[in-house]
Length: 338
Ligand code: PHE
Image (cartoon, rainbow, N blue to C red; front, side):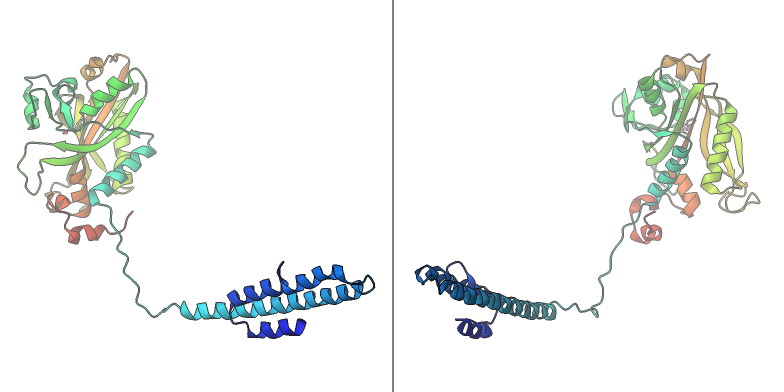
C-alpha cells in the first residue's frame, strides 16, 4: 500500500489532485482507514504488529504529502508571480489637483486670524428683511444714507442684503443678553451696480462685531492693527480716517500703507501711499438699544471689509470679474490647496 501510494503521489499534478490523493489514502474512508478497520478480524497476537506497520505507513504518507504540498504551492506561487509582474516602465498617470479659489483663500486667512483673536463665525441670509438690512442699523425708511447702497428689492419689505451688517442686528437679537459677543461674518452681498473692472452686483464681505462692557475705540484700533500685521506683514502701518456710517458713531475707514510702495506712491495706491481696506466704528447706541441692550453700560465696535478688494490688492488682480469667470489660466495660479 505504501509503495502504491507513494507512486501515485509522484504523479500528482496540482493542489486539487493532491487533495484527492489525500482523501483517497489518508481520509476517513481512505485505504489506510480500511486496513485499520479490518484489524478487528485479526488474531490478537498479530494486531500489535499490523498496527505498528499501519502507523508507520501513515506517518510516512503524511510526511510525503506535506513535502509534495509545499512543492506544489511553491510552483503555484511562482506561476502567479510571473503573471502579476508590474511593468515599472509604464508612464505614470497625471494626477490633477484642484485649487482653492483665491477669494476662498483670502476668506479663510481672515477667518483664521480672527479665530485666533477668539471670534466665532456667524452667518445670515442673503435674502434679507428691510428691517435687518436697514432699519435695525439705524437707517429708517426715508433715510438718505440708504442711497449709499443701491439695493435689489424683492418686495417692499424683502431685499438682497447690501452688506453683511444685518447679521450684527440678528446676532444681537438672537444672543440677548449673553456677553461678550465676538463674531465675524463672511458672506455674499448684492448691490444694484453695473459690473465693471471694480464693481460687481454680487461680492463678498466679512463683517466683525464685538460687544461687551467697556469696549473702546482703542480696542478697535489695536485689533485692526494686529489684523493688518498678520494679514500683510509685521511692519504694516495703518491709518484710521474719519468717515460716516449710520450704524456706527464715531465711524472710520481703515487705510493701510501701500503694500507695494510703502507709502511713496505707485499705481496700485493711485499715488496716495494708502489703500482703503474696510469701514468700521463704534456700534451706534441706537443699534444696541433697538435689540434691548443698555447702551449706557455696554459698548461695541464693528467693521466690514470687501473680500474682492483685498484679494485684488494681494494678488494684483486688476479686474474684479476675473474672480467669477473661473478661467483656469487664473485659477491654476493658485494651484496649491492651502
Ligand atoms: N456695512 C458697511 C459697508 O458695507 C461696512 C461697515 C461695517 C462699516 C461695519 C462700519 C461697521 O460699507
